[in-house]
Length: 131
Image (cartoon, rainbow, N blue to C red; front, side):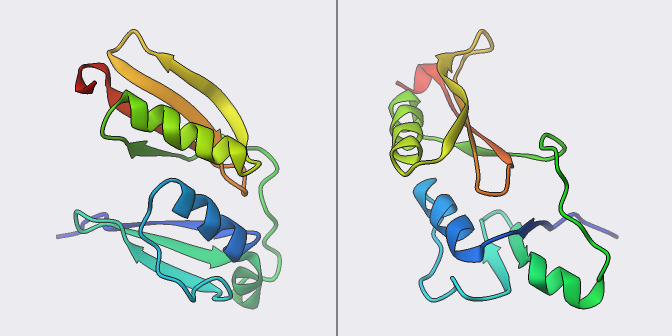
């Protein structure tokens, strides 16, 4: 039996990428910023694997980074609407870009989207009734 147990991302700068995901609240140990591969347990039996472009080039010399975003999206569940707003503000204050400013979505969630250093859109959301 097969099971999807991990998702991976190729990153331009490991330290910058880990700093971004720490802003989102991921528990990322110190000392990994200079690694070429990072494998994080994000709970529920799922792993988030990050590889540097340099590592990818060691076995696929012709690999080139994509120039458009939007093929893959990530989402972070927040405890309540206040946490959505707080994480969004923290990410903006750190100099990252917004994709969607926080808003109350018609489907019943507080919702926002930010862009990680590699161009990946990361949604922040919580149930509106969690307030």
